[in-house]
Length: 422
Ligand SMILES: Cc1cc2nc3c(=O)[nH]c(=O)nc-3n(C[C@H](O)[C@H](O)[C@H](O)COP(=O)(O)OP(=O)(O)OC[C@H]3O[C@@H](n4cnc5c(N)ncnc54)[C@H](O)[C@@H]3O)c2cc1C
Image (tube, rainbow, N blue to C red):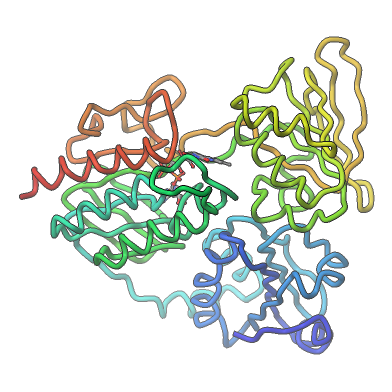
């Protein structure tokens, strides 16, 4: 895989025929998740399409000129022209394949795909999701000599890997950078011998057959499955959000805050995540306007007090965004005062949205019993409504979603399964 600089853009990309360019950053978990997929696809499509990457932090001017606002971003060129929508954030392998396929004649696409050989592998336990819940289950199962595979659509670590600081995980006197805590958890489980299949597309899950198909062609079977797929950020669902996601609207401060040095941002939300992440963003941005629907924050007292004492931060309580538009370099957030119904335009360089989470259950086709918010119901051993299927961590119906509670769930499921299998 060739790494290029802005100086080589003209010769390597504009004069380079069919090219896909990856703008990546360091300390960017979605960039790390993309890297192995990008590498793998370059082997498959490399005879027809050139794969290059560029370090965004050292080539900011070009990245800005090309409209790259978040990392990673993939741009697709043919004969010097952009030929498909850019992809950014947590990019799926299937999305890249879809874009690459549109750049080639169908018979060539068929020829490339015919070269892929389907495979089948068997394990005792499949764990879906390598956040704290899944990693802990993997550790306990591995230490019980149970043949286990951890499957994740991203890199191991879950939300912890993109949390800038964790101060409430026991065993550490000082607050830990989230990526370090998740790295340590993952290495401990991997060193024990758990098999990892990460940064893959989970194409299909058959809970009855205990079968998971990844990257379209690889079937993984097991006696039991642990679902540890966690949650994803809620979207606001207002005009402009989908179009500007990754192009001025971000859901990950760890990934994107560093690009807002001395710039002004809007942060939407008022819970723990919004308040803690706004505090982190204030290390870079010159001004933060928080927009929150209620009359006060719902975050913990300590975090609230810290943020409200921060001179860079101002707050619009009882306001809600109604739309996002881009005007040149600026993002315009139209906010409504919920009391007076008055609309105000907030001009900023970027917007961060932290308005709560929803469970990652879409692939289970409503086959599992859930609560009214869609979280999976379990018994005290983490068994779900389908025999042999367990669920742990944030994806289950429970009151408190923390690293410690996910770790506890993972422990319980693994011990229960180990007893059954042994
Ligand atoms: C911004 C933020 C800050 C936080 N700060 C703290 C804190 O300071 N202290 C604390 O205790 N808690 C904190 N939390 C909560 C904590 O991160 C979660 O409770 C914890 O990560 C839950 O772990 P989990 O394993 O259940 O899920 P997650 O961490 O969400 O991991 C789920 C994993 O599943 C993967 N996945 C999703 N769908 C699929 C699929 N279909 N197939 C395979 N894999 C899939 C994901 O890629 C991910 O790796 C924070 C959360 C956020 C969002």
